[in-house]
Image 1 (cartoon, rainbow, N blue to C red):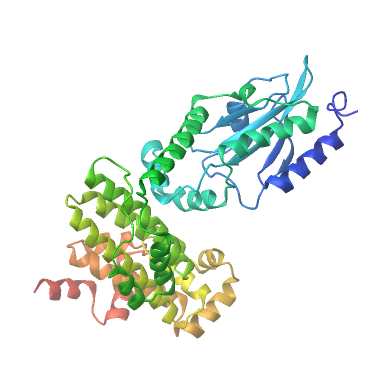
Image 2 (cartoon, rainbow, N blue to C red):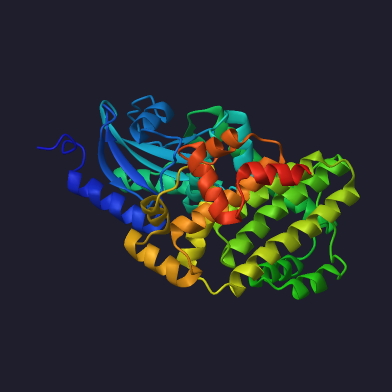
Amino acid sequence: MNNWDFVITSERITYICELLFSILRVPISVVDNSGKLIIKHTLPKLHNPLVTSPEELYRQLFPVNATWPQPTIACTKYYENYFSVSVGNAKTSVGKIIVGPSIFSSINQATIDIFFRDFKIPANFKSKLVQYYSRIPIMNANELRNASRLLSFMLYQKKTELASLSDTNFSSQKKFDIETDFEAYLLEKKKNSQFRFSLQYEQAIMQAVKEGNKDKLLKHLEKPLDGEIAVLSKNPLRNQKNHFISFVTFISHAAIGGGLDWELAFSLSDIYIQQVEELTDIKDIYALSKKMLLDYTDKVQKLQNNSHSKSIIKSMNYINKHLYEKLSIPEIAEYTGINASYLSQLFRKQAGISISKYIQIKKIAEAKKLLLDKSSILNVSVLLGFNDQSYFTKVFKECTGITPKEYKQSSNS
């Protein structure tokens, strides 16, 4: 006998979870009272890199072993939503069915930047978090509540009234309030016809970026805006900065759609967000917006004019981003997703040089910049991951025809 059998059979629980997962496409887990995971349905690569143990997260979100059929709703500090229904009867609970994570709406780059600032998250988690939030299923508040009621009804054949739903923490209630406020905000904007410029205008700009078509982009930028700027802050300067941050996130996604490496696209958006925060004049924000659009479009255009395959471009982007580390071909191949031997052959065929030589050329180009900044030869060799200064000098001379010392002397003169 299974410990579920005195209430409902394990087969029935399995069937309900499979059925609900196929409908909602939201992860579903079953845990016993000790927190042990018994059943899990999830989506590919959907794992929050900041959570080491899902079971521990479940214990934190739903600490009480409730013995009634009413669902419990919870929200994490990272805006993830979960709901849980206890399995048992009026006297005894033997575990829980937990559904989540889901989110109310897409999490943009600006919000992730806030996470990093507020929660002091290490920078190396950023790319993983971006991937994670791009994969989380979206359910609004009503869908979340009704899905929890449906699960309860499937288990117990008893209706659950909305008013009886339980929220385990204030953050979930706060999220529901935010959604209600947002709906009221949209209604007010509809009444006053104060939406941002039209969707067609935005889509035309994003399409130009995605195509890497600078002429088309400039043509659209010359057109007048066919709408009013929505108010995201009562402070005009802050309002424009908020719009810029939101827009650069959309543009980075458009560039990714055009083939730009997503790490490069998001790193570029980080740089522009930092730049806009330093500005104190609205007209400078307009100028930066145009510069940002042209920058993304140029990069996509160069990429699309490049005869290299996506695998080689991806490996080049990885090398360029990790110049201050010791790079290996197996490491690059793993990131690119192809065999190391095949990558080496393909790279030489398309780039005309070996991967090792390409790495050396890029590192020496970076070294020249550092030497111009008055860095010592020893420090530059260490920063760029060379084994010793003599080897760095040898590679530098092979690539430039002169030694680092001669380069420093010529640049100084």
